[in-house]
Structure formats: structure tokens, C-alpha cells
Image (cartoon, rainbow, N blue to C red; front, side, top):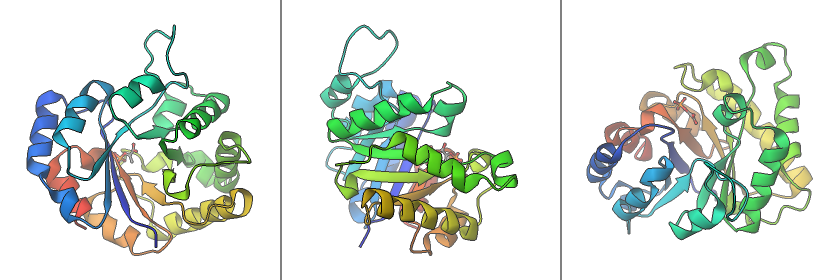
Length: 245
Ligand code: PEP
């Protein structure tokens, strides 16, 4: 049985006052839920979020990590710092990092390796652009994104490797993949994880304009193990509806 994950990616949103309001309204929603709840605030608010989420059964994640423990890497946040502030999960390969910051596959591979070596929960994002969907290359794109990032001998426990299928054309656009489109891609990812890497029980999340109104339709399919949510995770009122779907 794979436990559903509802994960929030706040990106570069929510200031200190917003985080305080969020957690006070969110209360014990996660404690009462059967679902696993993950929240990824921006770096400066991670300690605050960890303190506010204490004993609430919420996993606090980082939105990225630089794949070194510490050192002369101006502007970066590394593994030792994340461990120091109690972060146990990291989002890697988000399309905004690939596209806006030009993150290449070899850096993403290093990050995945780093996350594995440090025993963190990996939330690994993949997804095709609209032209790639339109020209039918989405399966090849996903295959390449996964194979280029994963070592053949992945050793992370299945519950610590989560893949998020996030079609780039659905992120922040208000256009959601249909459940059929998502299911097709999730089944493809699951096949790769099983056949090439021996992972049968890892969770595969859908991400891309998830809202309280469309979550139920997506999660009614057994291959969709939860959601990675941007916009609709910023306010407690809407994120609570997702967690309690
Ligand atoms: C995301 O960026 O991970 C995401 C899914 O964003 P949104 O829900 O806003 O489309």
C-alpha cells in the first residue's frame, strides 16, 4: 500500500507573516489526515516552518540543494546546512530550475547522488514541455530525464524516492493534465522504476495546476500517489482542502 503524499512547493512565495498565518490556520490538519504532508518553504523560512510544524506530522522539505556539504560556493545552500536545520526531504530537478536557471542533467545527477548519500527523501521532478508533447517525444524526454539522473545502483529506500510527473505546460498555467494523460505517464514512469531500478513501491506524484476541484479526479487512479502543488498550496484554506480531499 503506497501512502498518498500531498506536497506543497511554496517556491519564492510566502513571507514570515504568511508562514505564521498558514501554520496557525492549518493547525493539526496533517495529524488528522491519513496522507503524508510535505511542505517546502523558501530557505529563510525553513527553521520557522519546522518550529511551527513541530509534532504535526509534516515533513519540511527544501526546494533544492547544492550537492556539497559545505565550502566556497557563494550563494548556495548545501547539505550540512539542511541537516543542521532538520530538513529531511529535497525537491530536485524542478522544471523552473532546469529552465530558468539552466540546470543541466549532470548537475541534477550530482544532486540526486548527494541526496542518496545523505539518506534524504528525494522528490525528483520530470516532465515534458508543450512542444515535446505535441511532437510525441514525451516518453523519450521522461526516459532521458530519469536515466540521466539515476545511477543504476540506486540504494534509497522505496519510500525515500518519490518522482513527481510535472508537465511543464501545466505548471502555473491553470491547465491540468487530464487524469488519462497523467495516468499514461505515471504508468510509464512506474515501469522504468521497476524494470530498470527495481523500485516497485515508490510514490509517483502529479504536479501542474492541481486545485481542490481537480485533485479527486486525479487521485482516483491507482498509479497517481499524490500531488506536488504550487499555487494552491500557498494558503492554508486551499491546501487543507487538498490534504483532506
Ligand atoms: C510546481 O511548480 O511544482 C507546481 C505544480 O505548480 P502549480 O501547482 O502552481 O502548477
